[in-house]
Length: 275
Image (cartoon, rainbow, N blue to C red):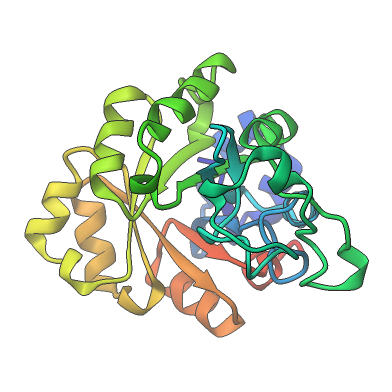
């Protein structure tokens, strides 16, 4: 994965091409910390979450990834929205799965964040893939996949059609709180990194982590669960760890100190010194 670099050698590596950075990544002195900055629902601290405005802001702020939430409309289209209802983030009401794509696209998904964002739409999954792949990594969360039977196959199809079933440099990652869904995604797309999400300490035991390591490449807990011991356990099982959701510089610094592999944040500038 492309990493954010902090410490001796950072100025040099930022001036080199990605290919050259591979050979410049090890400084001769000082401390090097490596992690990915993930713009949570886009740069959701600055623009309405899961909209083009937020994803463009994440790109502008030099995040390594944007994180998106994928659900399915009543007529079978994959759409990008976090809640299973549209009530909080749009001027509409109702469950995402009970509304057609046309109905979803007619909603204002920006005004809740500010008048300057009036008219922002709920994007489609296709739209996000076509607009951003090759420009920034995409961390795809399947939101409540148990509500949408077959959504795993639909996501896999869209990625395969774009040759993103064989992502270079881990620039496509799929994650969910639904572990069975992630087992299915691993079977459908064996070359795409899979992440499991949790906010429960029940899933930080040795036995749970060993089970996740059978099919997952990343273990992504809420930052309240993160400790150096947990990070070491995850790494010793061959997985990476990304943690969420950072909304303060202090939380970002804590995760940096814990040496996580990725920081999922509404505010990329709290994490990345280039901003």
